[in-house]
Length: 508
Image 1 (cartoon, rainbow, N blue to C red):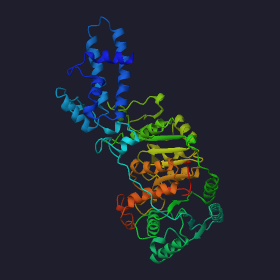
Image 2 (cartoon, helix red, strand yellow):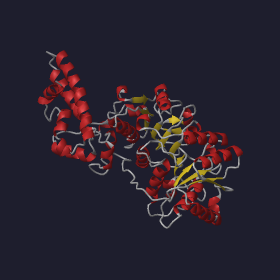
Image 3 (cartoon, rainbow, N blue to C red):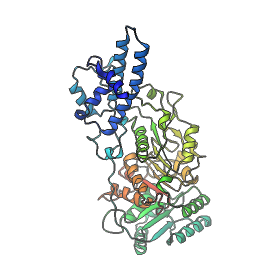
Image 4 (cartoon, one colour):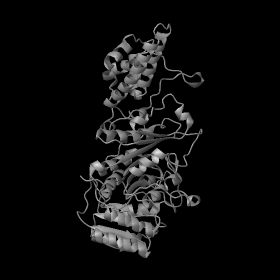
């Protein structure tokens, strides 16, 4: 019945009145539409068919009926064209030279929106796009490959002196059959080349597979991280990381002890036990506005294809976004949890109840959106203070989600009172988190690591593969010399794995 209605709907279409969504589908081969694009356009057809029937049944005898039906076709066509990439839209324009571009504000003329970020591709389509940039910005995935390390061995490096922390670390070393190595200061190690050399020799002697680094909070900083990357990538002749590393860190020794106890008790989950939720923010005023929304929906789609329903929390921070003609429809029945602004520019002080419940009930969280020391995905950091992340795994593509309090990259002295998102998460029960100390590359870096973890790889190995894709054949950049600025070459290396690197979240 639906196919017959759709056929009737577009029988009388013409270039003058619009070809409708069906007209776009008819040219799918010429346009090289992906399966995802065709599915999205078919959804437009289904929705339009219902409106068409209502108009026809209610408008019999109405002299303006044809005009209304034509308007409906034109609207369906415009909605379908939103899913085309720029290259596909150029092809459409060439195939339909008589169609005028749609008017926009201030009387200017332009083509309908061509934002590839409004397309929700499959992961396979992202890996093999029809053309570069076909799906908008931040869609070129990092290429990760395994890199051989020792088959056994677990080493903990720490500068903790508090007995609560030391005892917990000793328990972890015993549970993992590993060794605990105490240093005077991890935070100032980079200043002493001789001590760096001695530590590197000591690690070579142990020859560990996993290296868990447990710094005091005041030692945790960018130059400490760069120093450890240098040490762990310099264990042999190639420039890549030669172990599976991670950071054991929490806001206090007592909370570190709780993290370690939970880590020791943790057991890999069956795939069926994974309860994912994704979060994406619509924030930017330029062509990047929908990129984080898209990534949250991509994750939701990936899990749906595997038979697993997962909510997508979509946070919009500006009313002007919702007034745009290309603002995506977000029906609740399709797993969307929408947080909408109540002012022209809005930072949410709290999560909506449905969003909070979704995160509380999940055990794997994906986050995409802007971040600062006190704001993430359009939400104030303190909104996460009471969230139960118990046993959770977090993949965060936001900037500064794991920024240090004593920073080398930029001066964060005035931001010391802003508790970092990563420490809210780890203090509230998360067992692993991928975050960033500075400006994060987002989905292209986050997803490749997440994909490895979902396939049954340890967090440390997945993180090592991500970092080696960044290192390549290059040396680790120089240390920061004193708040050098946000975008220096070292920034790309500031991804951090928080949690035990030997943790395997998902059974193979």
